[in-house]
Length: 94
Picture (cartoon, rainbow, N blue to C red):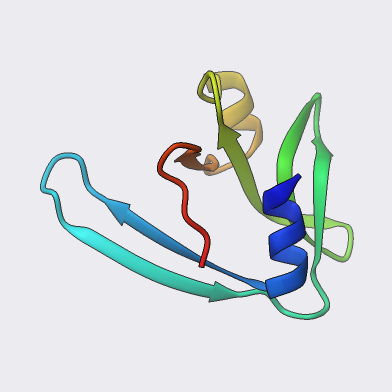
């Protein structure tokens, strides 16, 4: 998985998002601590996160890659506050 490999190598990601309602842009860069793991297909209850940042035994951040369909409500609820949804056609990791 390209996203997982890049996060493992770079240890950072930048989100460049635009509010669909007000068109305001927000760019945020986050650095992953060296002690955190980046894993693919991480189990969370009965679901699997596409890519997860794990600290110890706890998932602290989830990425769901939007290719053909979004995340359903049950999975979003299981992922707590919900995933960061990034359509693949507009995704850009820096």
